[in-house]
Every structure is written in structure tokens, then in C-alpha cells.
Image (cartoon, rainbow, N blue to C red):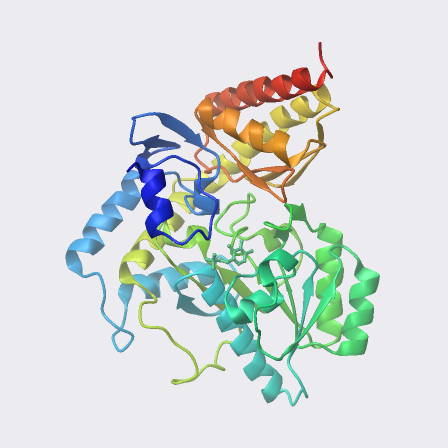
Length: 405
Ligand SMILES: *Cc1c(COP(=O)(O)O)cnc(C)c1O
């Protein structure tokens, strides 16, 4: 049996998998079991922010790995304390709770918002979210995820969720005034919902509304955080100060790590017994998280990634001009990019397969949007190579359709 067959036999099919078994990853490249290389413009869904096998990540892995892998939450956890301090320095005054994933960050946020609501004497816990949002797949989080194919008919907790359209401040105002929710949770750039950035004006107006009505302003930075959009956290493009921030994905340098940063009015609400988990914060994940922060800040990768992203945007904009019949829009922020196509889902899949064949890994979301989540370490010649191959792949699709003869 080959790896594809074994995968089908032994693993539940919760994801559509490419028929590629990865053997090694280094820098911006993945290598399969046949030794073929792939430029990784997906980074395991926004996880490998600093690329693969970064020397500082490997050093942290070795150093902490040789000391201990796990202790428990009854001991002081040095790497976790150091990372929490760095996260606070880079965001809002407050305290951190660590979990193992994005969904766990969302669950912690829901429980903390609930405790705050009760403390404030609010009748019910209501949370306002955006249409097409994604906040995770556990039962609490899936209720906040406003994508029907994700929430389906799974049973969810009984708290109220109010859905508003991204960018529509009038609707948000109405819901906040009428429903008096406890919190507003938003992704500054909606990820799996189609790479939809919220404008600075909208974020600031939403923040004002929350301030006026004592609604917690919560940022889901699980995908947008850790420098992906050119700032440590994407909300920092606007003049807002969240009450609560969720993070995960890139935070553990490739290892599972997530959590929340709770601002001053929330940071002391959790008491022993209110919340917890055995594995988090993993000292190993936290050690890698510290290395990520060092690479982003001291080594200047945050700034470098921002500049490379600008070049990438320029080059993609050039493609949009060349292929108006196929490509209609580029959106997102920094190294979080959606290229909206006018192509059929089959044609977009074909482009993804052609790119893979040519040794470049891209992602597709919402069936017709080409999604890129490149590492911040992406180099100019790699961008040029990607643009050249995407040009070829789109040209081929247009040729088949007779747009170009
Ligand atoms: C990925 C993601 C989550 C869920 O994170 P998991 O680690 O997959 O549970 C939540 N919110 C956003 C914005 C995400 O991108």
C-alpha cells in the first residue's frame, strides 16, 4: 500500500488531502518522500511564520527538549512566563492564559466573557460575531463560527450569538443597542471566510461602539497574529485597544500553542478551578514561542516580512491586470492574501494541482479564492518564481477556455 491508501485506511477523512507525503521541511520548502521540493506558500495554515527548521527554533527545541518536555501547572513554568511577558509587552496590559490550540483559545474566551457578564450583572451572555467568521470547531467555538458547512447541525451551548455583516457599522450599532451583547468577537482579517480585511474605519467605529455600550471588544488574532499582517497583531493597524485577544497558529513556532491575552478588567477573573488543561502551556511550545518572538523582533523578521509582502502584492496586482477575465481582486493584509478568481471551482483546483506539479504549494478557500499564507521569510526570487508559475497556470486555463488563443 502507498501512503495515500494507508491514509484512507487508517485516518478519518476530516480533511481533503493532497497525495503528497512530506519527509522534510527546511526554510521555505517542503520535501516529499520522492525528494521533490515545494515552495510552501501555505505554512500549515499560517503556522510556520518563520519558515521551517529555523536554526533558532531548532536550538530552542534542543535546549528545552533536553531539560524537560512536560511539568505540570502546579510548578512555575519559566519558558511560559517569559513568553507571556513578551506577548503582553507586544499587545495590551493584562495577563495570559495558555491553551494548546485556537479552538481552546476561543473556549477560554467564551468562559471568561461569561464570568465577566455575571460579574457585571448582565442577564445573559450574548456574543456578536461576523457573518462568515471562523473561531474554531469545538462545540462552544463552532457556535461563533458563522459558516453553515462548519456548524451544520452539531449541538452547541445555549448562549446567544448575534450575527452581523462584516463592515456594516449601522447593523452593528443596531444589534449592540437592541441585544446588549457582552462581547463583540472579530477576526481583523477574516481568514477561512474568504480573506476579508476589516477597514481601519470599521474597526475604530466598532471599538467606539463597544466602549460606549460596555461591550467587550475581542480580537481573534489566531491567524492574523504573530506578525502575519505586518504588525505583531493585526488590530494594531487601527487605533483600538482590545479587551481580549485570542492567539494560536504561529505562536508555538510549529508546536501546538494557543491562548488568550486578557486586559485589565478581565485578567483576574479566572480563579483556581475555573479553567485549565493538562498540557498547556507546554514548556517546549513556549520555548519555541520565545524563539519566534526573538526572530520577529530582534532579528527584524517582522519588518522584513512586511516589505516582502509589499513586493508580493505588487507582483500579484500585475497578474490581475494581465488576466482580468480570470482574476478580479486581491485582498487581505501583509502575508495573508486572497486572490479572488472568476473561475469555476474545478478550474481553481486545476491551478492548484498545476502549481503543485511545478513545486509550489498554494491553498484554495471558499472554492474560488486562491489563498496564500507565506512565511515571513519569503524571498524575492521565490516570489518571482511563484508569479511566473501562476501566470503559466492561469494562461493554461484561459487557453483551454478559448479566452486566449
Ligand atoms: C484556525 C483558526 C481558529 C481555530 O484554531 P485551531 O487551532 O484550528 O483550533 C480560530 N480562529 C481563527 C481566526 C483561525 O484562523
